[in-house]
Length: 257
Image (tube, rainbow, N blue to C red):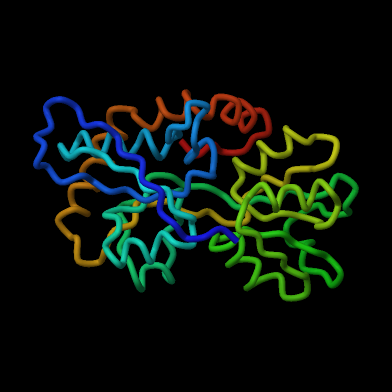
C-alpha cells in the first residue's frame, strides 16, 4: 500500500490573480486516467484537473493540486490540508456523515471486467462460493461487493492496475469498477477479458467539501450549473473520452456526459 503522502502540484495563477489571494487547494488521486492522471510531461492532467482549473478561474483563486491516495482524501479534507476533493468520488450516505458534497456533476454505473472463459453473464453471478472478485479500496465497487457478494472471496487492491492484472492473469474471476474503466480495460485486453456494462447501480460523482464550508459549497454549485450550461462537460467528454463515447453508443449503453 502506498504511503499517504500529499505531493503538491502548484499551478501558476493567471496574471490577473493578486499574490495575496488564497490558493484553492484541490485534492485528487492522480492514478485514474482519463479523469485524474499525470501526463507525459509529468504534469497533472485529466477531466478532474480541467474541472478544478475552471472552478478556480470561476472563483478567482489560483489553483493548487494535491496528489493524495484515494483513501487519504477524506482525512486530508477534514484536517484542513485541502479545501476540496475532485477525484471521481461518489456521493454516498456513509461519506455524508463526515463531509458535505456539491450537487452531482456526473452519473456512472458499476460494471465488471471478467475473465474471458469465466461462465459469468451478469454481476449477480459473482455471488458464488469459489469465485474471487477484485475491488479497489474505498470505492463503491468494494462497498457493493461487501454488501452483496457474501459467498464470493473479495480481494482488495489499492491500485486499479493491480486489480485488472489479477483478472488478466486469471487469479481473479472479475473486477468491479465503473463502466467506463471496465470498457477501457476490456478493449486493451480483448482476448483475456469480457466487459459487463449493464449498470448494476447508478452512482453520482460530486465535489467533496467540509461540512462547515457552506459559502464555498454555494459557489461550487453555481459553477457546476454555469459550466454545464456552457457545455463544459460536453467539451471535456469530447477531449478525453472520445473512444468511450463511441463505444458506449455502439453497445447501447447510456453515456455519462
